[in-house]
Image 1 (cartoon, rainbow, N blue to C red):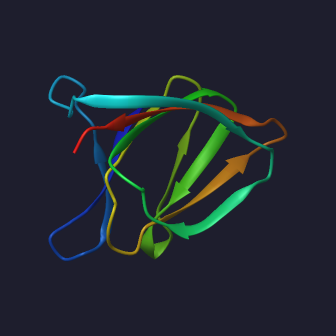
Image 2: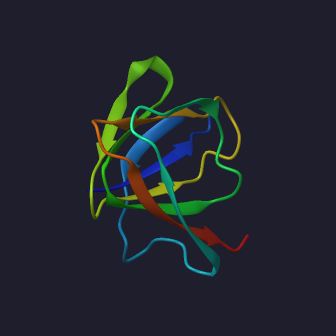
Length: 106
């Protein structure tokens, strides 16, 4: 699954499909990280536009209105919600979530 998390013209966070053929390029750096099983990050925004690629484990992103999307190994998320209400991130299951972050040059 490849999804985009962005803020629409009304200032609301939304999900939409991500077409990797037309997705932003211009990567400036990469980060490899992990979060422990059961961890949660309350409402927050992306620090800058970035791709988040799940390497192992499962995580979930929740946006306004309770809409949620799950991401597993190989799933790509383009986080562009640098303004607006943001989103909640949760690690699901009993395993840590390992991921790569690719920061997009602005």
